[in-house]
Amino acid sequence: TEFTYQLIQGYEFYYLNEHKNVKLQMGGSDQWGNITTGTEMIRRKGGSDAFAFTCPLTTKADGTKFGKSEGGNIWLSAERTSPYQFYQFWLNVADEDAARFIKIYTFLTQEEINQVAAEHEQNPGGRALQHRLAKEVTTFVHSEKEYEFAVEATKMLFGNNTADALKAMTEKELLNVMAGVPQITITRDELNNPVDIVSLLALKEVFPSKGEARKMVQAGGVSINKSKISGIDFAITPEHLLQDKYVLIQKGKKNYYLAIVSE
Image 1 (cartoon, rainbow, N blue to C red):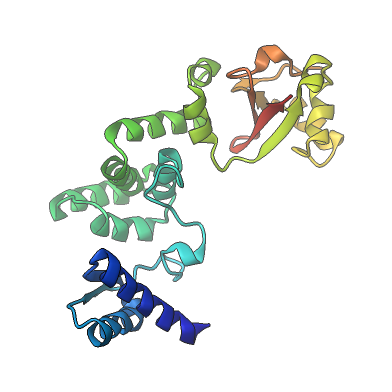
Image 2: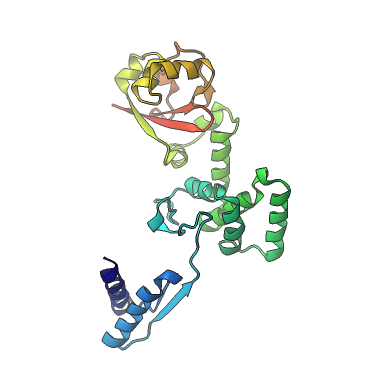
């Protein structure tokens, strides 16, 4: 596989040069051999110019490569990675990675970076480096409007925002925020003939058992659409639907489930 990979990538560069007039291929330093196989093939078969450009490989604090082959990758396209997910990725990188990434992926001056780093060092819990990195990259790739939405969505999910903020979201905004959140399905019949919340959460495997669901509900650890539920007899009805189709279930502080109503 590794042997043919180099030949196939080389031929790909040749094809793009021949049919799309591609002159330059860029990549990490580990791609040098693959890329120069392409430039050599182009020179021998086509006789035209082609160039290779590589830079030091970007790695994360744990030593793994920062790229799609490692999984957990992000895309520039909002269709593949929503602006909210994109923002969250940069917001959640390790301190060591944030200190390096802010130099690589932003256009901040060295003086500005030093100021942010000093602020971060004084209060690591404030995560100044991550917040500034996420702001700069999200604004650059998507827009300031999308960045502001990502910030508001984060406050809504992980802050103390009211249910009104959730209800004010459009369907597209809601689905962007909930991209990657585990989903469960509730039928219209289950809404029209509701069962108690403990039975429902156990049935949908939000909790492994009714006992655990009951314990969490009684402790005030379960919310529906950002509102803590009143007790174990609570039931989800059509009145709780967002956009007539969705219900946001929160378990504890950070675990969310998006219930989607099917006909």
